[in-house]
Length: 96
Image (cartoon, rainbow, N blue to C red):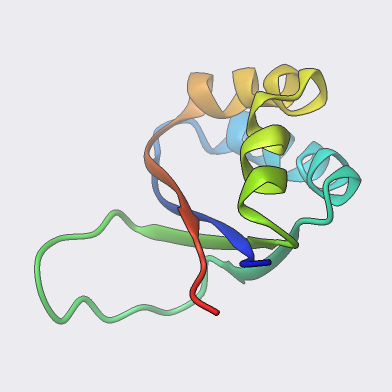
């Protein structure tokens, strides 16, 4: 079964509220087997454009990635991110 990924580029507009989101986002992801592979850090944009904060989360399956995003647990904390940042957010199926 192919893994699933959240591929996210974030531009933070309210650092305090975004810090609140960062403090509570890991437990809902863990419920669905999600783990951070990239959580900010250095990046070099070789082509196109990117927001300032890259995030990559791996899930055990594409379905788990979708289920996590749609879950009440994540939707509850998502409100904090929506209030504090703009993001490009893609759920993608991995290659086996």
